[in-house]
Length: 636
Image (cartoon, rainbow, N blue to C red; front, side, top):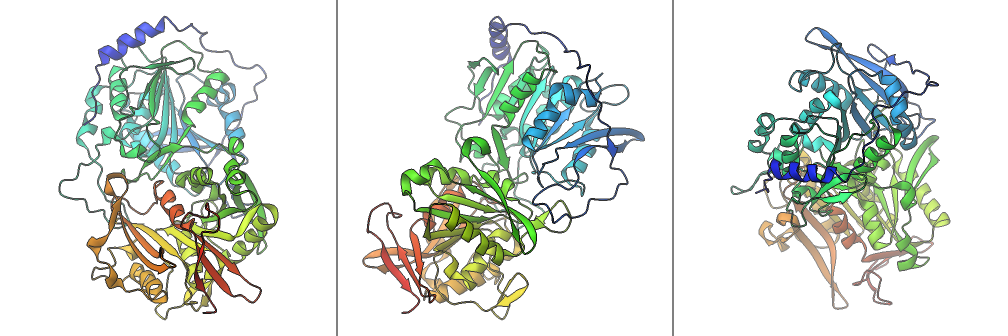
């Protein structure tokens, strides 16, 4: 059960801390040199076309408006997309205050400038002719606007949103966030009266289930403790809330975020109520208690650029992924490219410009000198390299373990704002050459991973080109074996190699239809085909295990793992491994990436000029000198 807080206690703390806050000026005057932007309407406009001369860029950028008919009343929203915004960019959804010119507001507050600096987008909600109505009166407009924004063919979004609401527009945005907390990364509300208990109480009775359209349903145990909608944590900051009227909202979000009752004082954010160290929220099972609710109870100039920057500092610390299934939704730290030294690079692949990312953590040289291992990562369908960096936290694992991380970006797919894998064989070969020539890496320890369609890339390589990698470990995607045993790579059919490679697959019970069930049920699908191939190649039998022989691990015992191993030189070596995540749908979760690395790190591979492959296993993950043992030779 969640803690409950007395709003009386919270308000008492707010009032007492107010004495410590210095007052600030009111609304700022606009810049006399302001040049008004002109919005181009998207209604009835043709969708942008694919542009293969650029890599991972939204083809339509600039300032736009879109009209909605809400009960025969025309309402508008504005869209600003930075010139450098990538496909599936982060967006901040902003409800502007009454009585302001939207174009001037974006300029004076610095929102446009920040979007340009971050190469992101803004989706701006505007009041009606008579100003903002109540949150219930605005519900239809907010729903229509966010439905268009979340899925259209003019631009594409990360899939999770930052929310900022000003004045009377704030409650309407907050009401949507309370009803859809899995879709909001973090939120800030200025000069807001918040929501009332009558609206918020309903979410205490609503629970998240296991249905996700297009995927297998998650089947929960009979005594399972479901997550209530009111228990979905969501970092929240109130700036100068309306005293005496936002109490119910504050109480609600403090409980949702499992906050401590006593605040910490921050000179920027005001009173900060951190997530309790003993929190048992599913949403922070990977990252630990990083959420918070903050209240800055002083009059601030909401048009000042410095305030906008502080809003972004609060919100952009966070990211999250999986916006349907609560049991896979995680709040995590967002990667700072500049601070981490993450490189975003391009290369020509089959005549088309393609993007990729390389992260060399400081720990790489400290741990491995000039021989750092490499993990090549292939994102899931429509997931760009930039999306996948944050959606997986692979950068955190690289930081902890010292390996070089290389994430591939896909190419335009069904339209100009979505992507899919293409020319994977050529991309792999070219990227490998770049990594070997430009970075200090170990050529014997190059690994492959991926999710969904990216897992299919890795698993196809495992079956057709096992000599490409020392080991494979991926999530929620099989090798796509045809009925005759062949595999399609880049439109060409290949015969499998029948050569050994250490391989690990994680999937969810609510995953793709082709991965439904488990290896010992009566279904015969792609999951069974993948296992049958690797078991056969390595001389294993499915009967060496049964469903109940799994080892259990992870948060709420979510992982069931089966391992097939052989003994080499007195050492038990894992060769093929499968994990079922019983509480997730299709999207991978952050807790799985360390599991993948724990498997990969033990293997290395050499290949001579004649193509002869020798594989090795190190019990220590190559941290103990000379502990590696040979586990395979293609000549034997």
